[in-house]
Length: 406
View (cartoon, rainbow, N blue to C red):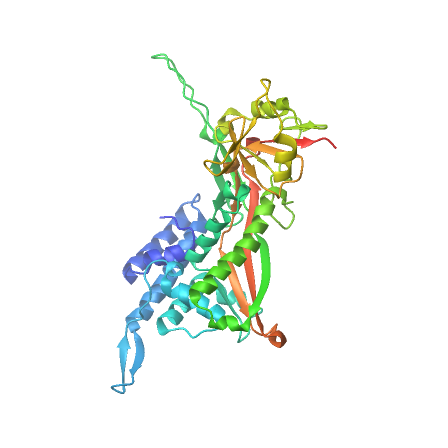
């Protein structure tokens, strides 16, 4: 079984018995010693999950001493840990936002929050700057999903590209359009096709995105739902907008790579116009795009380019090539292909392509850290959002560019 991260491996084995865990640990050790082609990184993730699951079982078997104030006696109770993914639990969600607000946690919430920190090893990461009034935690899964969902309503390329949640610096295969099957004459030899020819590989790096924002200390009195709504809005507006801009303009130097700079544009995949965009410029772009990508192709440009350079173009019969689509609440269509408006794209630049082959990666969610010391004199609380992310064109041949000649 393959696991994406330690948390997933832990949650898989946490309800097994110690004998099964030790048996699986021995099997992994044997695989490492005998199979030279085994994926060591995947097995290390599983081993760490097994180790944490065993420790967790041992802790539960010992029980915890609790004091009953009515009887005046101590008793041994269960740990009451949540089942399944800790970060999806209601206990962790409440603990996260209460910690950010400086509110008191219940016993269950405190236990769940501590367990979550052990899984992601966040305490070691925070040692370099942590103080008694600071805290750091991974966003709850529900909140992160809401941020990404809201980002997809922002419009622009981020609403149409592919999102990933994979470890950084690992090569991932991306399928590209393959050749069609052929008619076969009975009894004749058929040459096999190498699937590798239709698979592109992409490796995302890990770059930091940081945003610091402050709110009044009176936020401590906010409800959890109100504070969560604020966090979703703030992180969507800063972190996700940074990713949206990188999808277009990222240079690849200490930041993600964008479609404008990450593709080598030349005579094979780009065109230029001198004064105004002509009808034939757009038809040439459609003709240049390879057949496998054209089925899901879309146009992308900013709002000024659409209305200054495209809106007035007509075809050979005098009909406008841009057709608005108010019925479906889309921008419209150019020569039958949908239009994406993204104001991160420079003026007089038009992209045509299948934007499913443009992607961004957030491997470890978003870490939110709080400090009540740095703004002590101002009576505000500082929050820092930190995300490790990358953006990249996955398959460069899926895109064609039209721009104004310099």
